[in-house]
Amino acid sequence: MAQVILKKVNKVYDKKVHVVKDISLEIKDKEFMVLVGPSGCGKSTILRMIAGLEEITSGEIIIGDRVVNELTPKDRDIAMVFQNYALYPHMSVYENMAYGLKLRKMPKADIDEQVQKTAAILGLEEFLDRKPKQLSGGQRQRVALGRAIVRKPQVFLFDEPLSNLDAKLRMQMRAEINKLHQQLDTTIIYVTHDQVEAMTMGDRITVLHNGIIQQCDTPLNLYDHPRNLFVAGFIGSPAMNMIKGKITNDNGLTFSTTGIKFPVPQQLQDKMKAFAGKEVILGVRPENVNIDQGSEITANVEVVEPMGNEIIVYLAIGDNHFLMRMEERVPLKPGDKVNITFQDTHQHYFDAASEECINYSL
Ligand SMILES: Nc1ncnc2c1ncn2[C@@H]1O[C@H](COP(=O)(O)OP(=O)(O)O)[C@@H](O)[C@H]1O
Ligand SMILES: [Mg+2]
Image (tube, rainbow, N blue to C red; front, side):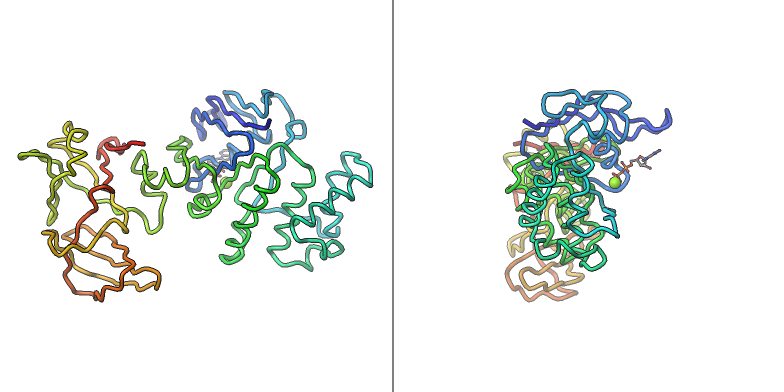
C-alpha cells in the first residue's frame, strides 16, 4: 500500500513567508495525482516536503502506513524526477540507470535485470551504451525516468519533468508517462503549471493557488463543476468566459449587464434568490455560447479563427468580450452581428464578492 496522506501541512520559510497553507490531501494507492497551479503557488514545496527534501513547519505526512515526518529522503521509498534531470555526462545510459542501485549495493545480476527490464519498458535498449550527449532530448528524459523506475519505489514524484521539451515531444512524453503509470501500477504525484498536462494525465487533479487547495477532483468534474472563479478560469483553453452583471428580481430572477438581459435558468431560480440585487459573475465556456436567431442578445463579431476542427469567434457586447467556439462552418466575418444564447444548463454563477460558485453541485 502506497497511499500518501497530507494532514494540515504548512510551510513557512524564514518564520515569515507562509507558502503552503493547511494542505490536507489523500492520494490513493496507485493513483495518478496532479498538483497544478500558477508559478509560485507552492507546488514544488509540497513535493519536496513529501520527498523529505524540505522540512515541514507543521502537520503530518504519511506514506503507505508510516508517518514520515522524521524520515530522511532515502528512507521514504520514493523516487523523484525533476525538470532539470541532470544525467551524469561521463556515464553511459546503462551506468546512469544502474548508479543508484550500485550505491545501494544491489548484486550485479539484479542490477542488470532491473536495468534491462526498465530499458525495455522505455524503449531504450539500443541506447544503453550511449552517453547522454549522444541522445535526443526525449531520450534523455526517458533515461531520467529510467533512473527513477529501476529503484521500484512506492511512490513517484515528478516536478514539471516535461517543461524543457518542445511542444511535440511534450505531448509524446505525456502519453508515455500515462502508459508507464498503467504498466508500473504505482502511485504518482505529478506537479505542473500546465492545465492541459494536468487534464490529460491525472486520475485526479488538485488545483492550488497561493498555497491553498482550491479544488480536488477528476479532470472532467473540475471542468464541468468548478467550485470557484479561480478554478473556472484556470481549467480549460480557451478559458471560460466571465461576464460581470447583476441579479435583479422582476417577476423572477434576471441576469443583466450592458446589452445582455435574460432570465436566470428555471432550475437555478431558487439557489440564486439570495443574490437578488447583488453583483455576480456569469461563467460560460466558449462551446456553450450558441448562435440562436430567436435570441434578443446581439453580439458583434470581432475576430474569427478558423481552426479546422472548430472555429473560435471573438464576440463583443458593449464592454463585454467573450469567445464562442463552434464546430459548424458558419460563415461569420468581423463586423457581422450575431444573435446568441448562453446554454441554460451550462451557466456558472459566481458571487462577485467571495468568488465562490453559487450553483456548484455534483
Ligand atoms: N527556500 C526558500 N526560501 C524562501 N522562499 C521560498 C523558498 N523556496 C521557495 N520559496 C517561495 O515559496 C513560494 C512557492 O514556491 P514553489 O513551491 O517553488 O512554487 P511552485 O513550484 O508552485 O512554482 C514562492 O513564492 C517562492 O518564492
Ligand atoms: Mg516549482
